[in-house]
Length: 405
Image (cartoon, rainbow, N blue to C red; front, side, top):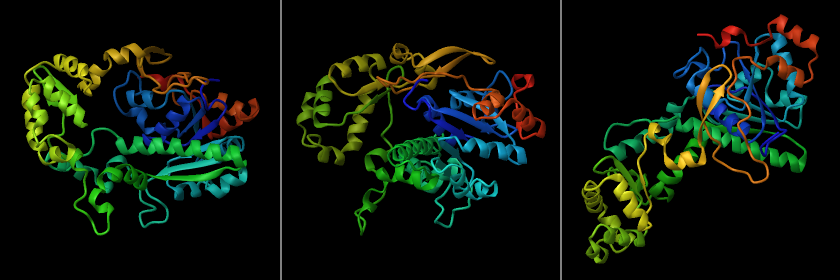
């Protein structure tokens, strides 16, 4: 029993990226997450490199600290088992469209009849009061719908492109976990559960438009969309003599220190660069100056020089070099561990720390159906009842082939 959510029981009907990321965050905080999978398993079990079928790199990182059970929700005994479990769960997470949940007999009204204290949290494509309500959605679709590829195009002065990570899925997953926490606090105060909807379109628009509504914030508009500093094509890491560098020269004092550090103190007095308004009119010149000056030394030399001047700076990592970053090594963020079926793997740490209720890596990512019988017992099923559900095909347990090539 570790973490601030120890004792909270979550039934997780999600799959792919968004929902499993939400339940991962809750599981890392100590919640008991029962990952309910269809007989074929979560789609991400096959995404990325793997040593054994169904245990891919993506799945391993999205599903640690959870336990897996297989229920066939198209089988009467499977859906009956799930409904029985819901009577004593604290949270139900789902990413099916609400129409599909209703067809399964799992609408909020139906689940609330089983357990009025449950937090019923759904993450799906679009809010249910608009014309897109029944549409499916994936990360790329939501990026496009919110306009992120056009922001990228303005920044790169090229064609529209997607961000190179599942940013919408993971941001909306964070929002789902946050919504669950809020609903649990409310339940602690009122004793009542509630339904919480987290639509991808609206949630990701909330995330993006705070920066890029910009001039359209005002009616009538005061200029174009897009935070100009963020969309400037020159806003990118600077090439050094041996790599790349990220430097955030932001305040007046930062610029003054930088001009002195690079041996150009006279620029600190130049009327074109004395304050943020003047610099905004001449950022093209400043980016050209920085591009030229940073190419003259190595990344390590610049980090040392600029850090001494208290200017925000870091050498640029790749995902590979980040693993060996000195800070990450010091805090033990990427740890090696022995997975019961997958052998030696590298895990991603829990970023937050709690002084009174520390979180921990409790379970490795599970094999498909590894904990089916164990979880059913914990939710009140007797041995004969578990056997009956298994015989009827409503539930399945892991087999030796579940981790075989």
